[in-house]
Length: 265
Image 1: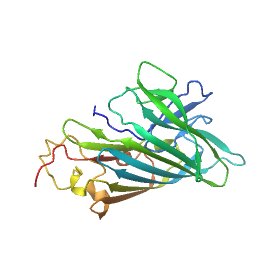
Image 2: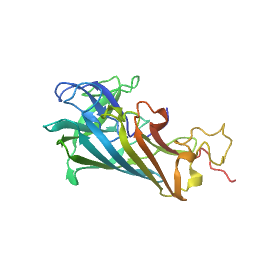
Image 3: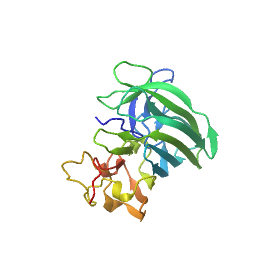
Image 4: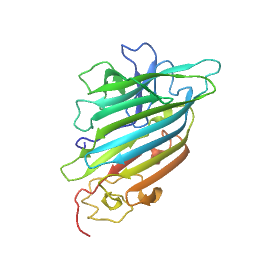
């Protein structure tokens, strides 16, 4: 496993343990923002993610992320109420640390309640409560009301430490693979990357110019360079439309990775 890898997305289904009541639910691992927790049984929410915009500033030691999600409930005639979670792992060396978290609903800042939980390292499923069997985490939770026939905008803004390895590389991951628990497909996802202290040539991309022997490079960034729009030496953007992360395996992760060893051309 990587040293201090930042896993900031992924929603895994599991049974909710006290203090939450009742139904099977999912706890968001971070990358896809507010996945549903509570109220609705089954594998899919009644709420659809109409769009999301993820702005990522990849720095030398930490990354600043601003997520803006637009949701629309399909529940007719009544509000849908869901708890949304966002994790900060505290025991595993392969995860980064969230330094700050700000949550907003329709532009209004709302406080997050931290609840202790854990992740099963074998199945990747997350649960609230405590256990000696997995990686402990504090979940930043908010409860959101989704009225019928109206968009709701949820924002998460946070800073997290980057991952680093003894090979000399730096990396940050934003996982989208479990966004499939929202109703239907995700309408549109925009990713905007700003490199702060890095340049495009610092990123290890499998279809880019190879700075070192490919056998030496520990891991490559994803998606490949061909999918990104290069707007400047330090800015990239990417757009996906009408996709289902649980089905489209090439749309399950945004991973920024620098070269394991910097070398002159």
